Length: 293
Image 1 (tube, rainbow, N blue to C red):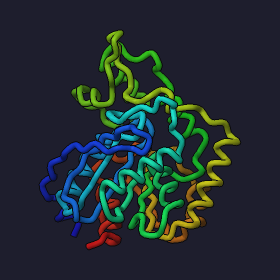
Image 2: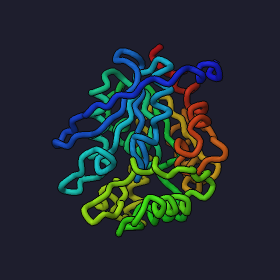
Image 3: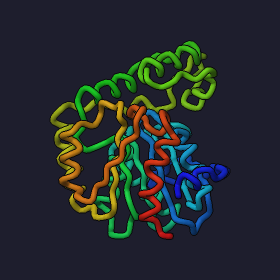
Image 4: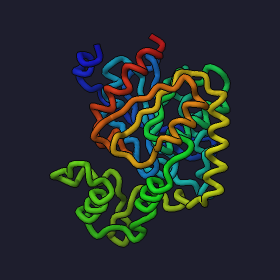
């Protein structure tokens, strides 16, 4: 059934500002109409809502009210003056988005977005969300894969002289992804500052490094929170990712016994950007089975 429905014309996207609880404004892209089953999509660290553009448009065409937003400190959303980017604060932002959307949505979170979703759902009342999809993330991740992500996010603090230079950095991080013939699409992830150089769209204060004890404590906390999550859950893995390993999967499956596993071949950690159509095909049957239709 989904093979046919995926041929639907993409729905138009519209921008909507959303007020966060501490006064920041979150930038969101929305497709579909209020009253339809809701889906909220959260990007990973260093990404923006534009990584979900194809998925939001597809969901809107299929009769969902879909919304993707820039996390605070990313893209067109506000930057915290106090550099308040804790998962508790990110979860507060998700609460504001869910209220804005109305009803209990399916929540799809990639990497950082998945951890944010678990925080919100784990502390919320029953009926907060209808289902959750985690995209290539678990509470405990592989140290080497995490280091590679952090090195990329914390690198290039001095910016880039040109968009081609930024494109070279992305290609080095994602060597398996076909390089676009025109790198201009990368401009939505960059900002040109007064010095004329291009910088990534995120607040450098967002990516404070955490030592191993802090990561272990955080993993234990999230796994404990998972035990109160009873809604349908899915973990979508990227075949070429080095972030989630067997130990992390088994720990998450023990904490979430209802967890379903999906695999997207030919994709790295940024699955939706690597193979958007394959990613959509992986999650749509799950979302539809647990939607409000």
